[in-house]
Length: 398
Image 1 (cartoon, one colour):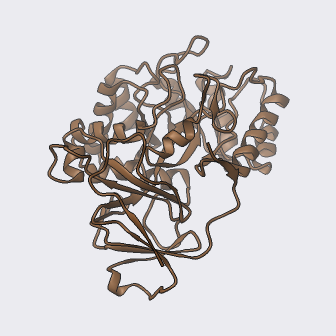
Image 2 (cartoon, one colour):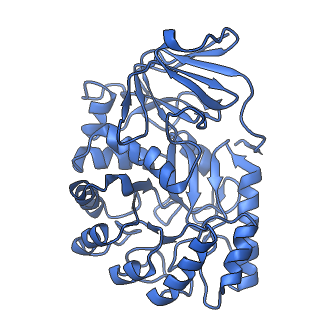
Image 3 (cartoon, helix red, strand yellow):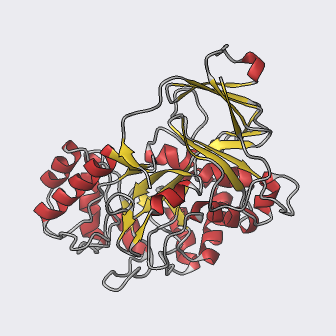
């Protein structure tokens, strides 16, 4: 397990060539007419046809061998604690396993599994600042984790949110997991958070574990958090009609998670498509959780929504990359000049019935991963967790 200082992107140039399919991460144009990417100092410097890119004779060359390249996957809903350990399942190395599932960035919905999590206001602020600093300074397996997401407790006042924001905290943990559960209380605190640039997520549905509570549709609408967290329940969903009503009446982000109700997840993505608001749908796993750690949770959610939810595989991949990046204000997630060089190299899994990688996803299979790159650095080769990809990229040297 590699846990290392976040020293910044790699220096130097990397040329990725012979890309058979370049997925942009952007719903408005999911597939790019390109077969090469030039990376300089960990950022995308250019992409397009290889013969049209700037000369880079000193670049390290990666041959994609006709496989697909997509932006690194983003998990919009995780519950980290410290480093690469989760006390929920007493498991070490869970983040590295997610890396092997194509995930390059994770966003905390609260460090709620921390043993003895402080619930007094001084303690919860200290805990959030510690988590933010910890994961900013050290990256498990190189994965970017945005952490430090305090859970709202009764008695918090506007100055607490100002203090948190000034300390670098940019997220709220799931509204409803602490003592603040009423819509009117949450609404005031969510507004304070928004005033100081802190993004909020609200728990949606029944209790996730003993001690938490129901957050119904009226509470979600009244609180007006930036993200309707696990709209398909985590695990227990609201009635399907209530979920559809949330998609229609709220203008906020619609988060679908792996650890939720699959039937409701499919209903949510269908109604979002029908309403023309697919650009509001983002994906997460809501893990680690009672059901365990799901290293392939984002890939499996992509496959589920594509095979059963009436959207294309390319669109489903956008939900886990560019759409999430835009809503979460992240530096990766899109193939655009200046963005972080966070990539996942994909191909059809061996012996899939699909005619190509995208078709295999639409049939319900997950793809194989041959390599993952973060900030221009190769973080893993052939995934130890996915089925084997038909084609695996090769580092050719200079």
